[in-house]
Length: 265
Image 1: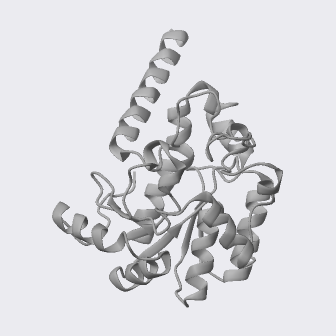
Image 2 (image 1 turned 135 degrees about the horizontal axis):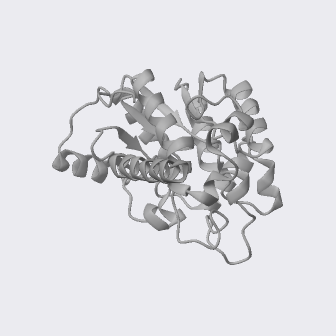
Image 3 (image 1 turned 30 degrees about the vertical axis):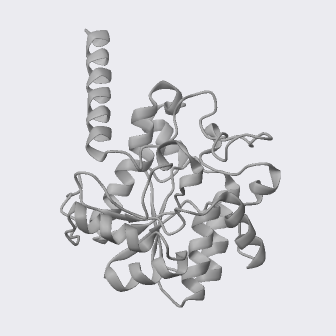
């Protein structure tokens, strides 16, 4: 397990509150400037969704070079992987791709975890494809802070988030420069600046995740309604309590091992 001793600046709650009060009235470009001058090990974490693509374009326009962390779950749409290549070619950022531990491709993942793990145990799936690779990336790259494309208008757990947040327990700082933007603002920026975007957006998708848990959004539905449709789930685990996710993962693995042992006996 990677070390959690990621070097970060230490802020107390009153300082974070003050920072968020100041940043709340700033434009995303100003927030990016602030992040760039404040943190010496700043990364953008993105799955190349619309918001992430806007941030990449803004950084490039402002002449700010920020390396990118991409978590390849091995279950992305081909269109998403194509967009990752196109974005890297256009913006020339350094791309750090992290995959599930010990798996180079989908076949290796199935060999290790079995078919359709997301149906059998979505906690183990989320931890394996997102949480553990992300933690490994932060540790190996010594990330102090990460830029995310999360927005309040995406609702769910994101509705009350702040521009700057500190990940509970680990101290990692997450900066959400588009926190106060709507999907329409993101879409308008994409078109006005000819930013590369996922072609699935032209087919009714608004939020694109893994192929097995993403569908187009219907008229009148929320932006992320196409993610994990039919369930109450709103997050993949990447932006939840790391230690709670790890505890759930360990408990699930222990239960599975005990079951295997009983069967073998």
